[in-house]
Image 1 (tube, rainbow, N blue to C red):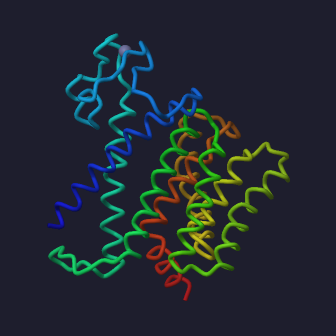
Image 2: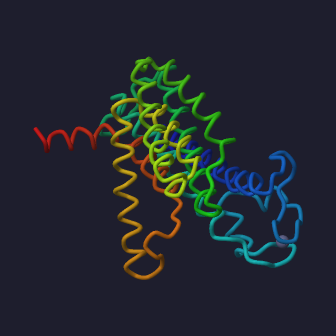
Image 3: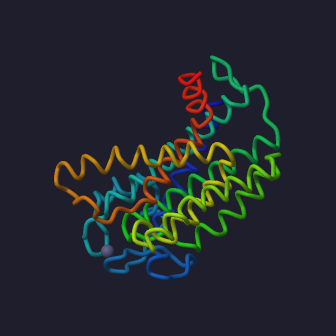
Length: 268
Ligand SMILES: [Zn+2]
């Protein structure tokens, strides 16, 4: 029974991943998200059976059936990772609810649990979109962050989060980057980071937002320092910081409480 749930959520994730691939491209091209999928190189329409997450990439041998040009590995990779993150999120939510025992049997879950899962899956999807877009075009779109801030905030209010802590979270998350933006006159970070920081605040609330920001810098240095040492990047060259913020956010969605508990146990 539980395996059935996981595979359904995994498949849902790969479908959302496929949609994200398409959405990111169309946001960049400023095209409507409706309309049939097409090959970005020859604009040939893609049939439904060529659009099955992960599998089509394998069947097509990574080539477009129209022009024969290579299909980027990004497509199946995003589909696979979204599927895995979705299934993992569902599993960890079950664990947190205490609805799962050693044998993986679900005891019960209610409406609130469902909203929690939907919120997490939505946030993960938004973070993947921001990650891909920022990695490729060094930009975080307000069209993605602003609606997400309001939706996540509303869902958290519904889930019984404290309003003051949520507002403080948004203020700290956004303010942290606003401060750097003002001090550096927009040189260190872009305006998009401010909105992304606010989104993280709306998701994690106070004081968990601190952990999310802290973790972003840890991930950022773990990735940047080797890049500089091995000469792939120069010190002070432009780095899409949204990539680290989104990665840290996904980690905090999954293990925020555990990391915080572990950290506090070190201090006290
Ligand atoms: Zn083509």
